Length: 336
Image (cartoon, rainbow, N blue to C red; front, side, top):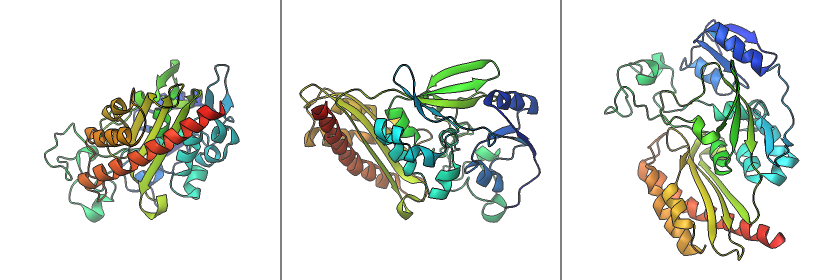
């Protein structure tokens, strides 16, 4: 891999990383595992003048805090999350989502924070321009959106592909952020702007420090599914993450969070599908109603998949995922 010249600084702490980002200016980027950033630098989608490396910082082990939340260091490797006994016991959907990411080699290098901050993708954008295309698109400061020529200059429909973010949003996770002015905490779903040109709401000199996942209430269940080519090694066609809770009789749904990933510029809450489920007796009719409502998210065609194919994919797999979530909630309720 031949890259352009850039400055490299190695941070000893996240606070130092924030300070370095500020001192190096707007063209500096932070790098954790590098599994997303380095390929993007190779194709010059990203061309930072400087990198602040986080590889010298040791990630803390996942732990349970005083409020019974699980706190996971943002520099934790994805493989460690997938294999963590604590996470597999307390938040098995998160472990399942981490294991769904690409190959073992990627999971050994990729970090939780890096996965949440991976850039959006589209077939036109993610190519070497001097090889395959005639001109840059809006995201590369060009004059047209070639996949969607009717788009305005401030609209980019590149797709956000994290396998983990939908699971964490379904689990109502928050993130802790380090910046020059100190710490702040944010619900994870507010990290995403919905704008493919600038997908994240992080400040220029801010770094994610940790992810905080609240404890799961009794009578709760989850379901997770990733559709992708090559047995999951490829980026997702779609991701479905569901967390729901049943009433004392284990018959009606009292709470549901349904999050769809890899079909829009950010993970999307399927709110109409949630409303079709909450307050109703769970079963085939409720699953069908929720799955029928999933077209509300208006998926974008991407990477060779048509919109109608993705809608059908979501309708079929959401029904199955909901059934799995209800089975787990009932099993949890009977154990309690």
